Amino acid sequence: MIFGFRKRQWADEVLEELNGKYGAISIVLKNFPCRVDQSSNERRFSYPEFGQELISTLMNRELQNLDQLRQTIAFGSSKSVSVKLRDLPTIGITVSGTPSSSDRQFQSDIADALIAAFESKNIRS
Image: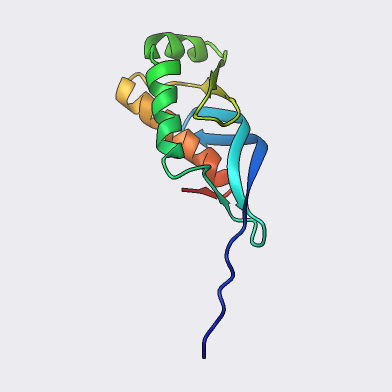
């Protein structure tokens, strides 16, 4: 017996807001572009390298001064930045919470909070 497979029909989608938390770090992403399958509502990144490019751009360009970021959010404020990747809409990202004293752990917590935000809307690579 041969089963027919239907071709997926992907459409661009922009999610108004995603929230993620890891440990004591919270992240909010606004205006988040992704792709959605019209039949199953499965969501994927806009392109295969999107997740890695987002984390890399965020950490290496927008949040590169970890000491300043740590001081800002340690006193109860948040830090908001904008990230533009390729020809996609600009993504607003806000980081808040209680930072780790270790740069390595702090960066890891931010990355894990981003992953939690992706998972909150079942976005896959």
